[in-house]
Image (cartoon, rainbow, N blue to C red; front, side):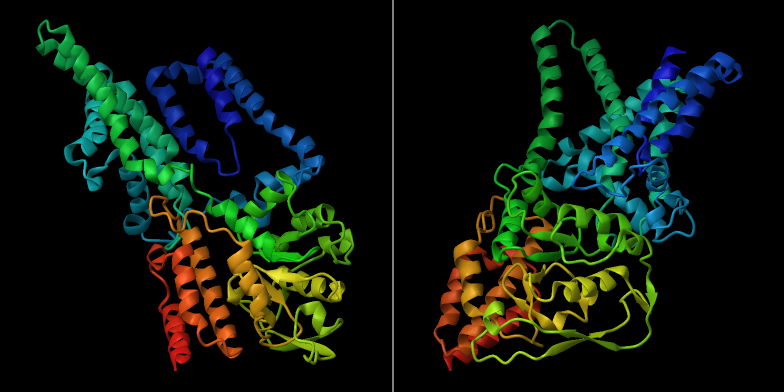
Length: 524
C-alpha cells in the first residue's frame, strides 16, 4: 500500500496542463493487474490510491493564491476556483481538455511517428555522427536489457513495455501533431526515453555479467571493461551533442532582446508575436529591470481577456481606455469587407524623426481587411486599433519584424524599418531615416556569436540575423537615395564582419537580389 500511495501521489504532483503523465496511467493499472491483481478488490488499496492522488492534485491549488498576487506573467489568471478550472480545462483554447485524437491531423507514420523516432534516434542512435557501431550501443543494450528482464520476469517485462509504449506511441496518438508543426514535441517523449534508459541499464549489467563469466581471473581486465562501457556510452552522447547544447557563448536571445530595446525611444509601446520574441524582453524588464518604460504587448495574447487585464496592470500608463467590464465583453467580430478607419494625426514631423519639410496629413485611413484566419476581425485587431486611437500619437508605437505581415496587413504600410523594430508613422510608405537605422545597426546593436562558427545558430536566431541583414539593405537603399553611391560595398563589408553571409544560409533569394541590385545601381 505504501508504494501505491507514493505512486498515486507522484501522479497527482506531476499533473499539468499538458497531462503527459496521464498516458502512463493505463500502464500503471496494467502493472497492478500483472503484479498484484488482488489490489483491485482491496478497499484499503483504493483508499490509499485515491488519498495519494487527491493529495498530489490538491498541491496545484497553490496556483490560486500565487495567481491572486498578480505576478508579471499570470497565464490564464487562475486566481479563483472558477478561473482555476478554466485554466486546467484549457477553456481559452476551446475547452474539452484538448483531447483530439481523431481525425488525425497529419500522416500517422510519415509525420507523427517520425517525430518520435527522430527524437529517439537523437538520444540513442548516433550513427549519423561518425560513431558507427558505438552510436548503436544504447539501442543494442536496450534490446538486450528487454531480453534480460524477460528471462527474469515476463510480468515485469510486460509492465515496463506497456509503460514504454504508452509514453511513446501513446504520446504520438495523444498529441496528434499536424504537418509542419512549429516545433517538435520531444519534451513530451521524455518519459519513454527514461523508461528505455532502464532497459539500457539492465542490458549493460547483463553484458557485464556475461563478460565477467568468460573472463577468468584478470581483475584488471574486468575493471577495464566496466570503465570503458560506462565511459563510451555517455561519452558518445557528450561529444555528439555538446556543441548543440553548449550555451556558454550563446548570447543570441539576450542580445536580440537588448537590441530591440535599444531601438525604442522612451515610453514606447511594442507589439510582439510569439514566445521567442516576447519572453526575452520580459526577462529584461522583470529580472534586470531594464527598459521598464516600454510596454511589451504580445499580439497573440491580446486575444485573451486575462492578458489585457494583466497588461493594464503591468503598464499603468498604457493608453487603453477600456473598462474591466468592456474587456470581459471582447469578442471576435464578423468582418467581410474592406473598411477604412480614420485616425486623426497629431504631432510635428520632428516628433516622428521626419524631415522638417514633411507634410503630415490631418488623418490617416487604415484599410482594415478580414483576418488571415477567415472573415473575422480578431480581438487583437480591435485592441491594436483602440490603442492607436487612445494614444493620440503621444507614445511611439513599434512592431517587431517577427510579426507576420499577414497578421497586421492593415498596419504594415505605415511602418518604418528602424532595425529590430518598425515604428508606426502617420504616412503611407514612410521614408527610411538613415541616421536612426545606421546608429542602431552600427553603434547600438551587439551581434555576439554570429561571426563565430563554433557557436551553433538556432533557427529563430538565424531568422533574426536575416531580418538584420534586410535592415542593412534598407539602409543601403536610403544611402543611395541620398546620393551616397559609394556606400554599398562598405555596407557589405560591415555586414560580412558582423553577420557573415555563410552563417545565415539559406537566405531568401529576394534579399540577395535586392543587395545586388542596389550595389549595381551604385556602381553606375
